[in-house]
Length: 257
Image (cartoon, rainbow, N blue to C red; front, side, top):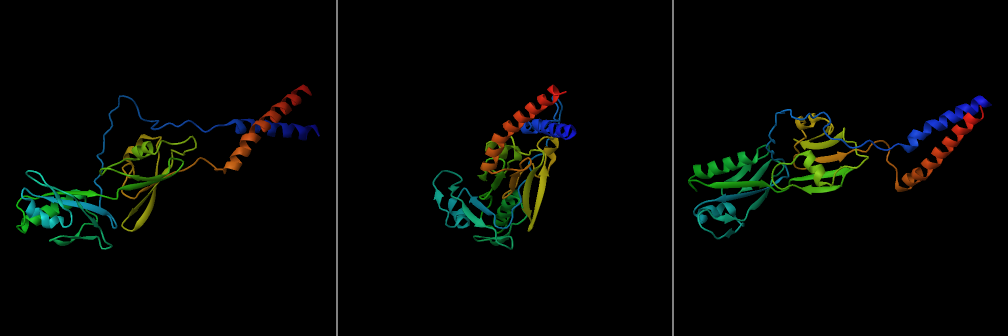
């Protein structure tokens, strides 16, 4: 009988650290050393994908020459190179856009700089404008953020954002965020792939998903099993009770010897 009682006491005592445990403190880039030079990789240029929306503007010293390439865009007055309100083009399933005057252009898989160069050279080659200036931007650069982090769809200004910037803009992680294994889901060429990135290692800077792309999904995983509000409240009430009973049982064991 006493042996069984002792085993029960030992089991109860073992529960104490579990009932009182708290998640580990958040710590990024633990292996990054001070005063050490690390090579910096530039942000890769975004490549256009199906269903992307891009805005394109064509400028010329003579605004009338540029007008046909900005159909429906309208113009703002000004000296020198005029300022056009951009037109937006949707990349179709074949990877094309229907551009004024030039017709269909295949843009899928190309960067914005490649598109600007291609359009400018074609306009010049056909003799429409001698030295056109072309501007292009992605209009649908959004990141979806879910999990143990501020959830939502983030609109990105510009053509570059990294995962640390996304986390900061989302309000930061929680104590239950699993930062050594953050999932990034990316779709390219009709294939969806999940990547893991460790925010506690300096290797995150070399990850293919450190710099995010349009329509990426960032999923901040939780540590362990997540409970509903009712289950969490139950544990908050139960843990102190179990800890108290365990402590009392432990003292009774020693005083009975």
